[in-house]
Image (tube, rainbow, N blue to C red; front, side, top):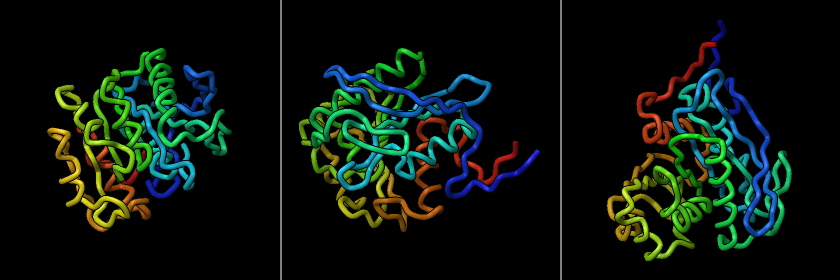
Length: 239
């Protein structure tokens, strides 16, 4: 029995599977699925990374840490992938960045993959640009709801926010106190068209969630939504 201090890039036990996704417009996207060891997942996160033209990719640190921690600590599966034209150590997805337009096919391909594998209780989890994809295209999909990290609301219209009304799918926006684009007070106003949107403010955090305190705060809030029985996460792992 060993005890691991859960910090930074620590990778807890999981089953890691390199995957490919196939879009309706003929592209192949690369990604990875992290599953719990020795048990069925209780829920699934479909993650959508930050803006690839500003360094966002499937390994953006919060997404990577979700995959590193949640399968072992909660039994939640985590899918990460590169949207079209995006590169990471896993490889480069086909195509070119399309500003959030053709990326709708990327989201569809990821959902089709998860459904083909029979993975349960799928939640969309977007970070920054990824929140725009979740909001624009997730409202009519077979998902439990959407979790939004640092949503900028640059590309999502009020009409697209209203599309979620009446769907019975919760939308939870986790907003850092010192966000570069949308601070919690402004988020409350901007999300008014989406009835019942939950705004969770995280003190002393910024858009990129740098530092273990910010990282643990945001990951704990994700767990509170998808696996509340495991909230808050421990700071040590024994295995």
